[in-house]
Length: 407
Image 1: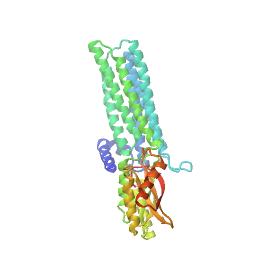
Image 2: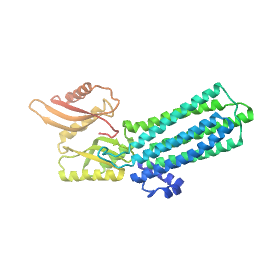
Image 3: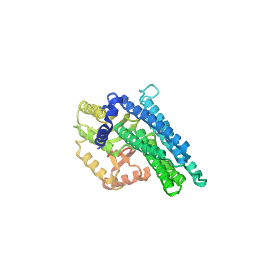
Image 4: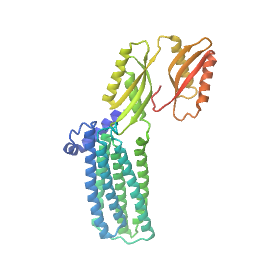
């Protein structure tokens, strides 16, 4: 599903802006390549700088002629957008640097940092616009109406609508949170400029001056939008959980190979767009030939890189499948732990018989949000087992679940 959505977004982006991409991005169809991806980011940054500087200059001129604080604030907003485009341009340039001795996983996370800086700039602009608009409300001053102002603002709205569509399409095309944040900023600018235009027309036809009030409303919207963008850019830096749909696709990819019984302990690390690393445990029958199982593991790793651009390391867990007693115990215990919590799972179960008791050794995966202390959980599971198997003693290792893949 994730791959389908990515392909759909890529198709829409090509359809809308094919000419621009073909002209300025070499090998533009190969978005999976880091160099091509960086070229898309550089194109978006340069387009943003040129258009925002032009809009800012025209609005400063109009503000000087009319005395409109709202238009001046909108001009400052466009100037900050140009600065944001510079930040994005630098971020893409840094993220495209190859890995080195100090950064063996590359520099792709630089893009997340640039997206965060863009979001902070959005908030700063919103706060400054709020402060200036509040002063305008408390001390209103007349604004000179001009049809030139209307024309400039209307043209600005059209340009920003195009920029929002361009950045959104390009961001989805290459999976860039920075460009998606820039698209949201352009959308905010459409709302901001529209509010300024409406207030100018209302003042001209009714004599009611809403310049300051419109600025306040727009400022609040911009600040809240910036806070939302901060969260979306911080998540990958802090280590957000992988997309459940992506996790299911990885699991289905692994389970389709012959000899694979199950998977567990999937970990995915995001080092920036196009730089994902992962590890997973794969269960195979202990009775199978070790070389054959190892060949399957190698194929899983190679195909994961080719199909998902995921550098996957697979740990092989041999599972006894020709002992009916162990198989029955594993199935029974897997169902029993779900009576405690539906997402509890077990794996790597084995038994070690002794003269007085039998050790049942296994791992138990604890899902996030299960607020049961380990000692208490161990006691509850052990009671379940000894109630049915009095001579069995549980030796349990608890694992945390870092993804949504079932054990």
